[in-house]
Image 1 (cartoon, one colour):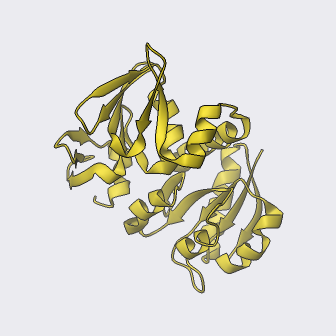
Image 2 (cartoon, one colour):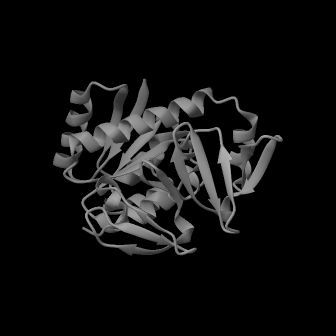
Length: 240
């Protein structure tokens, strides 16, 4: 069971989200709700939630100010807000997902599925390479025919799915093919500034140069490559 806290200064929105989560019949239990983020700060260590559903614009302490209270936080975050301009900032705070109010049930369900995968991986992972990576945030291990290649994260432009394999595209115009799936890399790199803009592509946000409007739109990276953004993922660029 995943223990969750909801923080939202609008009581109606808070209750609506709680009801939607309960009706989804997922492995998430709301252990407490707060109308003020400051009140949660005092209790969160005792509550020890796995995830906080967090509004942004709130009196006294807004959502990002709340997150800044926990530089080494142990809980995940799902942002729920009516203000789409906070999407990129939410990702930089390593949010699992960004949901616009009124929260669409299908989007909520997908966010919770992603959350469950991340929490489960956190609890069960015994991969020493991943543990070292979490501490260093500078390189990822990529299996190769000769052994393991350690790739600097900042040099990765984007990753492309090819079935059960993943192609990693680097700044120096070279590519690496890994036997790990793109889903594995998404779980690994999400908290390091990477975002899956399409089911086939995972990009490094620091290499975004431009966003182009369209049904889903597309992004142009620092090397000039243009990649499609799925319609469902376009909200991260707050352009509709």
